[in-house]
Amino acid sequence: MKLRLNLNSITTRLILFGLTIVLTSAFARIFFLSNYLRKDLAELTSSQLVTLAGYVGRDIDNNIVERRDLLKRIAAKLPQVLLHDPGQLRSWLAEHHEINPVFSRGYAVLDITGKALVKNPALLAKAEATFAEQDYFMQALKGEFAIGKPFVGQTGKVPVLPMAVPVRNASGKIVAILVGVTAFDASGFLESLQNIHTGTEGGLVLVSPRDKIFIAASDMDLALKPTPSKGLHPQYDQAMQGYRGVATDINARGIEELAAVAPVPSSGWFVVAHMPTSEVFAPLKRLRHFILSSTAYVVLFFVFVVVTFLVYLLRPLKNAAQYADRMTRGEIPLEPLPVVRNDEVGHLTLAFNRVLSKLLESRSALEHMAHHDPLTGLPNRQLLADRMRQALARAKRGKKLVAVMLLDLDGFKPVNDELGHEAGDLALCEVSVRLQMELRGEDTLARMGGDEFVILLSDLDGNAKAAAEFVAEKCLQVFQHPYMLHGKACHLGTSIGIAIGDGECSADKLLIAADQAMYGAKGKGGNQYCWAESCSSCLDAQNQSSCRVRRQSVKSVA
Image 1: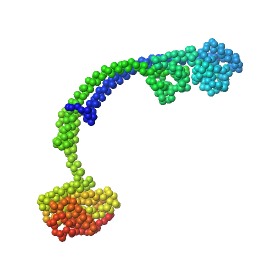
Image 2: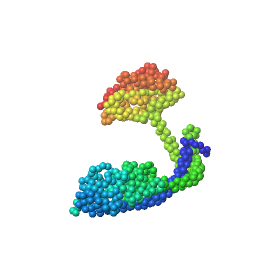
Image 3: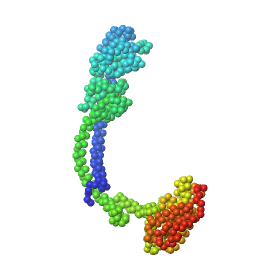
Image 4: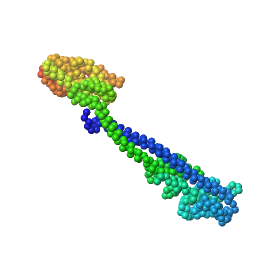
């Protein structure tokens, strides 16, 4: 079997499909093996990132708890009388700051209206007269420990974090708010976060979901920057909603990262330890290159096997196609194809043989549909023409005559107009049934279209005129009885034109002559037959234009 690259050939397509399967399977093995190793590397790195994020998160949480507890102790010890003596209050706070300077930027005291009793320049992000609108003040005023939103203070121009607790009198009433301010660069506060890197491009990020900002990060450029908008980075969206764990995401620079999220419970913050996946999965690149190079030889072997096998497998199918093609060109008769093997190709051949059998069985039905009127089942114009040619040929050989009778219904239009075309179709069917009952088996009744019918009387002898008149009388009698259409009695009639010819006449001339005679019958009132000038020379001229009338009133729909 000669192999040619023909994309319209099923053989070529199957070969290409087999080649695709081989290549796909090879790359699938690479893919699944890479994914398997990728999963192991991801789990190992994820475990390390989770440990690192958890450690840093706990360290930051301890630092916050330490400052919270210190702030509460100072608030509890603060003498109430000093609230009316800002100078003494400032000195008292300075002493405590020297003893335990965890709040690197010192303290401030606010009254319950938000006015500063003891000011702290580091607490000012701008020239503020009151702190009543600050988040930490409003939360502390409710009696809770509060962590404010980080900002860059006016002094030092470094990020600072305010924390606040309420100061209560002996009866428990809040009389002031104590605020402690810590700079991000303070020793022992965020050092573990800012000094740790993962790989060459990874690091740590501290995020405040409430404020939607990056508080601090190994990359100092991220400090106090807003978090990504919702929908841009699914992992951040999940972390903002409370997810704590490890996942893969795309960072703001478009780099895929493996990131672990750990909580900072006392503040509601979370720590993200991230590392680019390009660093995590670098060993996979070398492994993938090795697998690709070693698989190339395997692919070539499979291609050879698939091509050889398909050529062998599809040879019977091609032979069957050649047989079928020769049948369609008429080179060999329509006959079942040989079944070579009992496989799918053999089953296809058997199915083709069954279809061929069905086609041969339905040929006669198709021919009937092509030569008969779909409404009445009578021969149509095409079949009538063929039978007229045959009848005229026999008439010429046997010195016989042929009679053609063209019938046009009288009173048919009112039926269509008043009862509709469905009733008209019923009437035409009933007329065809009645007329067929009055004819011989060798005669032909055909429908020309509309309400016109043709009767062909063949193989007539010298009494052709009498025979034709006899049939015409019987046809007129058919219309004496009314037709029941949709429960109404309708009266129809017919005008008949008759033409007789011998073998020298043509079918067209006979039909034209009968048609002219029919119009003559209609012109004389209808419901009668009329003779045409015959194409035959054997008929008496005095009888050529005679008409017979069957008296019957043509009634409209009852």
